[in-house]
Amino acid sequence: MVKQSKIEKAYQLAREEYLELGVDTDMVIEKMGGISISLHCWQADDVGGFETPGSQLSGGGIQVTGGYPGKARNIDELIQDMDKVMSLLPGKQRLNLHAIYGDFAGKAVDRDRIDIRHFQRWIDWAQEHGTGLDFNPTCFSHPYADDGFTLSAKNDKHRRFWVEHVKRCREIAAGMGRRLGTPSVNNIWIPDGSKDVPVDRFEHRALLKKSLDEIFSVKYPREYLLDSLESKLFGIGSESMVVGSHEFYLAYAARNGQMLCLDNGHFHPTEQVGDKISALLQFTGRLLLHLTRGVRWDSDHVVIFNDEISLIAQEVIRCNALDRINIGLDFFDASINRVGAYVAGVRAVQLAFMFALLEPADLLRNYENDGKYFERLALLELMKAKPFGAVYDYYCMINEVPVADNYIKSVKDYENEVLSKRG
Ligand code: RNT
Ligand code: ZN
Image (cartoon, rainbow, N blue to C red):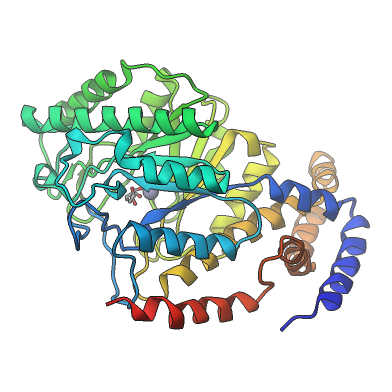
């Protein structure tokens, strides 16, 4: 147990240390309160959803591994888990739903038939929590996606089915945004692609463009809905070509005004997603982040406070772009306590943003402008040994959530009392 007086003392020392560099930690803490992270509901049940009892992720080139007990089996359990997660996090977070997480009341509702009523439960929940919802069409785990193509399918029946699904998702998301008074991001990611070298990339991309044009012909106010497009380099079973590539969506979004979603697992491993932010912000109004951790491939491991996440957070802060970014998470690890996975991942992202906010921006910029590159390098290195953990602990304390390792015990208690009793 960390004592309150100890946390305060450590914070005061940290505060003085940062002040010497011109950084006001009180202000950083205030800014942290304004950063809300959209928690992806799919970590709680391994991307299963509630269409049928025991639904499982299938296809789409994404993969969950592990069989840790205690996954959420229905909407009540998912809500219970999300409440627990949120109780262990400082600040206010949003919730990010996939279309398969509706309240279908035991009935078979196909994806081209869903509407806002299936999400009333979530809207009520969000209202109670005073927070917002984000949304995603689910273009995988469905017979019409089994051949690897959805919005870019040459099978016109399938393509029209998916266009209708995505149209409905936008309508649902806009409805959520309207009712909750905060715009919902509807992020479109499709798995379309081909395992082996195709000869007709052009037609699939033409079809994807046509489908998107049809989908976006319906307009919604930006106060309700923000449209976002997520590209990918490759997936399992789409190694040779992904229809919705970075170039495709970059061009589409820049021309038509959608947001681009940057999932940091969706690029070549040596590409730095952090570097893309300042480039894209010159041309797109907003960006969505899918923060994740790829280990050797787009494996969607739990986010940790690593260089990749750190650079992304630093670039958002250095671009002064917090108000132009929606932060979402995208990982699914079934090999550890799923609730703990959420909390560890969100806390890592928060730490990265706090670390970025604690950067002595003026000093570093002056060094850079004066060509003092050794001094810039040295100071950036020195910042890594500053007591930012003490600032984060204090931030947790004043938000009345478990400080430091205290949250581990809380997750373990929840596992013993709740998760382990699930069949
Ligand atoms: C897949 C994309 C996509 C999904 C979720 C479940 O590679 O990252 O965002 O992970 O929609
Ligand atoms: Zn993603």
